[in-house]
Every structure is written in structure tokens, then in C-alpha cells.
Length: 495
Ligand code: NAP
Image (cartoon, rainbow, N blue to C red; front, side, top):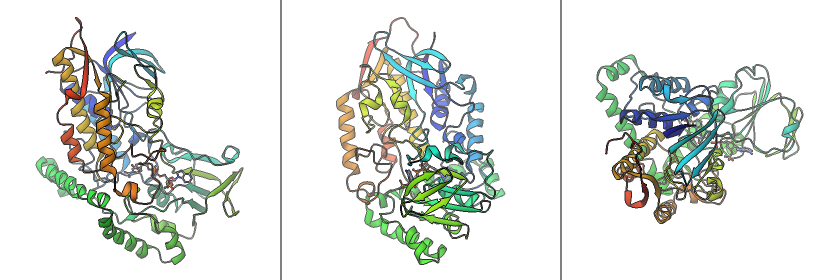
């Protein structure tokens, strides 16, 4: 059976970033497990029309790999995917990737002190497991009565069926989140009729996307510090958004901008009313777009706010009894964020899966380590999400922290590293305290930031710079370092 020092799950921003930094630190004995045939994670899977990052390009990239060639201030999905492919290639990660290899089970073997990993391509073992599959990897499908009897076409926004031509069709779109607001305006002109089923109206802000001019790109190429300065300016400007989340009264000012946007773009008072959110701005993700409302006012589009009672073989019946015939249903219904599929597959020292341990409320120390699961680190783990800035900033903070853990292992000659339960408990009590009074719990909405137990297990509930500060040093005192390594070769990372 093959053994590797490190096995990384996933090749999105997290997995690739981790692999690149490992190589840069001289560690070569690692593999990345990738269930698909290409890198890119969520930016490979989400190919729906109009898919684009809603965080500015200069910030939504690795700090060590700036890209002067972005075509616009907010990059389209194909460019981000190309960027990730290029990074994987340029930094020598490709030979480490095992494509079409799905992790089925990872069991911690206490006797041998390693992970026993079963994949769709066979078994392997590893000293260290790094879960970098991300929280947006498992699409969530709604449980609609009668859906299994529907005879038309259905697909999820994260599994867009490009073979299926929507031209002239009657289409139902379920969901009005970050994905739907991007693809609805793109498909509206080609469909005969579109019924958009909205459960909760999102807060929508004007969008500031624009093409980057030739001279800007030339400047960034010839003088990289200019792009770094832009990145820093964007970072700090977006950090200020946190104020409105932590002090919901400040959010009222921003709410007025959003309401003006709605009132300017939608004339019909009845439609406006349906589109006016009934909770505080920021409670759910704020969506930047200039195209959403104009698409909804088109004559071939209907916004349905009655719930769905039933799906019939060729139609959808809403709560008021109206029946709408449809050819295709597109689910823009998001992801299993707090019930991540991999949690059922990772089993710790006592044989319990993470999902059993978490019981619907994921929890970790610094979003990275879980007591009872030695030599396991998460990237974008519990309480690392945010609603205002680039997740790549969080990812790089965590990669730095994991490298610190690997150095600590090397320095001490230890074989295992496991967070102490009391450190994890204290850390999470602090997060709970930080979450109190924020818009996410007091804003009057139901969002996927709050799990089924009513607990914030998703968001890092404040500015991101304190997160980076906390992960700057690997705090060995919070961990138990186990049994000295025998004659085995130590990790290559320098102490
Ligand atoms: P989402 O934000 O979770 O939105 C899902 C939508 O589906 C919501 O409107 C939700 O309604 C609705 N929904 C879910 N289950 C439903 C049901 N059973 N019946 C009726 N409606 C239902 O998902 P998403 O739009 O795919 O976005 C997920 C995340 O991906 C975002 O928050 C963001 O982090 C990321 N994302 C980013 C970008 C970007 O950068 N541009 C683009 C897309 C996605 P409720 O609101 O009532 O729950």
C-alpha cells in the first residue's frame, strides 16, 4: 500500500495553495486526491452562465501569484479556473495530483498512528490528512413533494447541463441566492418563459464591475507593487464592511443604497414589495448585481413568492394552488455547508465520524483542528467563512498555520499533533461571544451561516485580520504532540 507523509483532499484554492507552499518549503512527499479530472474546486464545478466572483480579482488570488491579466475588476469563472490551472502547472503541483480519486473513508489508526484512506482508486496511508475540499462542494437539492415524478429536465447550478438547450423553453428557477442572481439574467433572453421561485428576497447592491483597461494591466505587469497596493486598498476597504455586520444599526445606511437600487430598477410597486427583503442587510450574503432586477421585470419572467406545494410530471404547483407548466427546473439552491459530505467519511481515534462528533454543528480550533482527530487539518473549516472579503486570505492564513504545525512536528520529532479539547472549547466559546449581537443572529433571517442547531458554525464573525494574527504562530501549547518519531525520516520542512 502506498504511504505518503501528507494527503490533501481537493484541488481548489485551498488544496493547490497548500501543495504549492509545501513544495516551496521542500516537502515533496504528498499527494492531492481529486474526485474530478481537473483542478479548480468550486471554480471548476460552477460553470453556469454568468458565473463570476463577487470579490474583486486583485484580492481573489494568491498573494504569491498576482495575476496582472485579469480582464475585469471582478473575474469571470473561466478566468479564475485558468488561473488555478496555471498555478498548479507553474508551481509543479500537477504530478502530485491523483485525478478521479474520490476519498471514501479515512480512518485514524491509533496503533500505527497514521490515516488509513480508502479511495475510489484503492487504498493508501498518510501521516497527515489535510481536508481542503471546501464547504461549497456538495450541491443541495430541495426536497420537493413529487419531484421524482417530474418528466422534464432538472439540474443544479453547480452541475450546469450545457448540452441541454434552454432556447424557447419554459423554465423554473428555484432559489434566488448568489448563483441564481447571476445565471437568471443570462438565460432570460433565450427562454420562452421563466418562473423564478423566491423563498427569501436577497439584499441586492449596485455592482461596480468594469473591464480593466490595457494601461492598468500593463502597469500591473511592469510594476507589480502597483497591483499589490491595489490589493491592499481593496482588502482594507472591504474590512470596513464588517462594521455593518457587527453594528446592525450602521447597516441601515447601506440598506438605503440597496433600496434605492431596487426602487430605481423596478417600477411595479407590487413586484418591488415582493423583492424588498424583510430582514436586516448582511444577515444573508449581500448580492452585487445590476442585472438581476432588470431581468425580473422582463415580460417573460414571473417572480413566484408562494412556496412550492408539489411538482407534477410536467408542472409545478405553488402553495396558492396555481399550476405552471415547465420543461426544465434549475436548482439554484446552494450547498450542504454545515453538513459537508466529507464529515461522514473521516473517522477519528474512537471510530466516530466527524459528522457524529459534530452532530450538525461543526466546530474546530482556529477552523483547522478537531480534538479526537490527530494529524488532521482543515482548510476553510468551521467558522472560517465570511460575507465580505476574499476566502483566499483565510486560506493563506490557514496554510501558514498548518506549515507551522508541520515544523513543530519536525522540531520535536513527534509523530502526532492533536488539539487539546479544552483549547477547542475555549476558542469556540470566544466565537460564540463574538457572534452575539451581530446581524447574523439578530438580523431576522434564516441563513446557512447558522446551522440546524441554531449555532454559528460557519462564519468567522468579525474582521479577518485578527484571524490572520491568531494563526500567525503555531501555538504548540494548545496541542498535544504525541510519541517521538522512530527512525523514520522526518518531514522535510525546516524547523
Ligand atoms: P445560496 O446562497 O445558499 O442560495 C440558495 C437559494 O436557494 C436561496 O435563495 C434559498 O432560499 C433557495 N432555496 C434553498 N432551498 C430551497 C427550497 N427547498 N425551496 C425553495 N428555495 C430554496 O446558494 P448559491 O446561490 O449557490 O450560493 C452559495 C454560496 O456560494 C454563496 O453564498 C457564496 O458564498 C458562493 N457563491 C459565490 C458567488 C460569487 O462569488 N459570485 C456566486 C455564487 C455562489 P432561502 O434564502 O430562503 O434559504
